[in-house]
Image 1 (cartoon, rainbow, N blue to C red):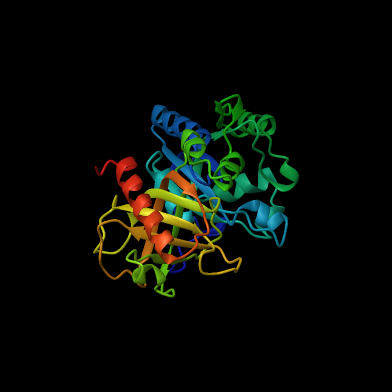
Image 2 (image 1 turned 120 degrees about the vertical axis):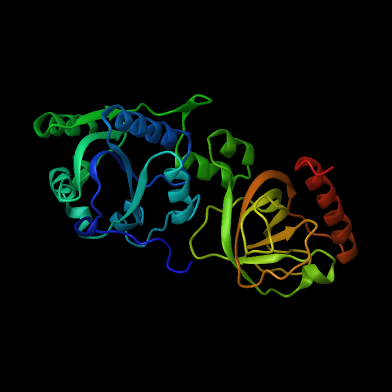
Amino acid sequence: MNGGPRRFGLADLPEIGRAVVTMGVFDGVHLGHRAILDATRDTAAEGGATSLALVFDPPPDEVLRPGSTVPRLAPLHVNLGRIEALVDRAIPIRFDEVLREFSAEAFLDALAPALALGGLTMSPRSAFGRDRAGTAARMQELGAERGFSVRVVEPVDVGGAIVSSTRIRSAIAAGNVEEARALGVVPYLEGIVVEGDRRGRELGFPTANLQFGYRPAMPSLGVYAGRVTEAGPTVSAGHPALISIGTRPTFHDGAEVLAEVHLLDFDGDLYGLRLGVELLTRLRDEQRFADAGALVAEMQRDAELGRAVLGMT
């Protein structure tokens, strides 16, 4: 979307000074990420340093496995905003073919002109540098040699399993909004509103059709209740909405999955705006109806239920 945030190379990092650093993708900024970010902030505060998150984009897996695209729990700018609510600074780092060849030692050397590394915070499952040689144990050795601390933060366990972005993507793909939220991530979609066939407006339920600038982690087909987080000047953050993820089977036999957003109690023009929505509750599965009248009746029930679960009644 408009190019997104600037991604820095290691050679052009802004000058930061003494810092406690954590590194990763942090997609979604779930409970496990927050534990690491909180530890980074606390360690930095103890030593009077800046707490800093270096955020790799694109995700290293996409560079290490060409042709693969990891579905995103949120676009980069949203993740950065969530991270910056927890630490002093978040800087996106461009992960490319050059960076993938850096050893852990070379990576630390490349950071030196921009910052004095006072500490590193990481998960025991993380590893940096070529061939993942920069394990927690190796970083502790380097810390002892170079004069920085290494704090290892254990993964967060919820329901007998470790919280991870992969687990959350699986929950969202199954339509399990509640599990995703329990793991610290509200399912999120963001796109530019583009013109559709205006079928919703004809039925009395105008929808904003989202065109994505990234590959989102898509929920399973169905209808969800949620709230707007980002839009133009005519829509306030928090505005209640119904979100349909589906193929519109009542009218089409196609397989294209669309994300359509109906803003409750709103009648305005959203075309061309960037619209972000959080999916808070799953209302029902996608259904094929006998005719438009049956669909409208169900949409009216969706609106009533959505109002109830969103506290509008």
